[in-house]
Image 1 (cartoon, rainbow, N blue to C red):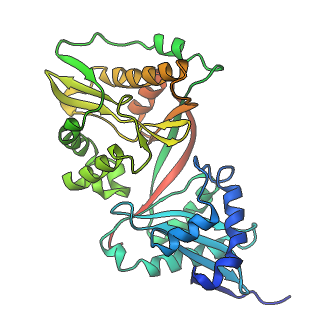
Image 2: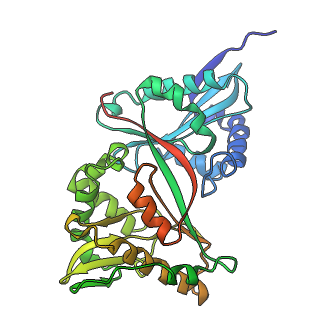
Image 3: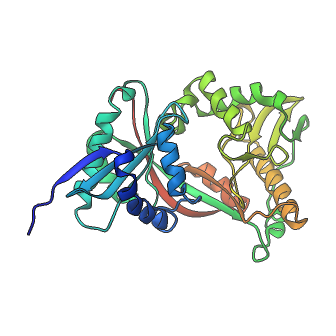
Length: 330
């Protein structure tokens, strides 16, 4: 039996054609095996992103034949975002993944002095948890929750049955306006600065970083922003809570940020925020204004109050995955 020679190289013009088959195999597995909500870029678009420096790709060659790759980006946030580690077949997976990861850590050595690495290990990638921990990665368990729309889901009845505490005097609701940005930044920063989210997205640790996140959300960088669906909570006309909503796919809405100022928590206001945004979406679907199949969100698996709150308004837990992160200078 011939010896197997493994080699890692950065994707370049010399390997574009022979790499196409591996990438095509990844696109086939992206939704079924890795639970991607969106279809990955077409091959030509992925190559274009690599050439523009928007995406980085390390390819593993097995006797000069590409059999695996690792893709990551450094331009979307202050973190280094490891997108996927994909291998053809099932042979020698541990060796292939380790070689790719070690090359990735070598290539990003300088950037990692200041940037955290985040790696959502969605789908079958969760099998790599034990091995990746040997490189200093830590983990947060995340749950994906969904609220479904459509004829087969009686969402109106579900929402009517949501029990709400009496709303105290002084509280009002509004949709998104750009004038609410500064107040929202302060609320989100205080709510997230010590959260697990700040471990794998350090932007939450500062006002400037939180501004970057909320500005990109409201400007549609992470998906079409839905200001009419966003619910802003106000007390005596001052912003004190928010439920942001955007679109991650044509028919899939998402709650990327949900926060209430500490002094207003524990009053049952979270249900008001969620119910208001979901009810508006349901009305849009009913009136054929937009066709949504669901709205989803993500929260920590050990955040029992949040899980209970989402369940109480009709969200169902779909799947769980480990969010791994490697802190800067590690």
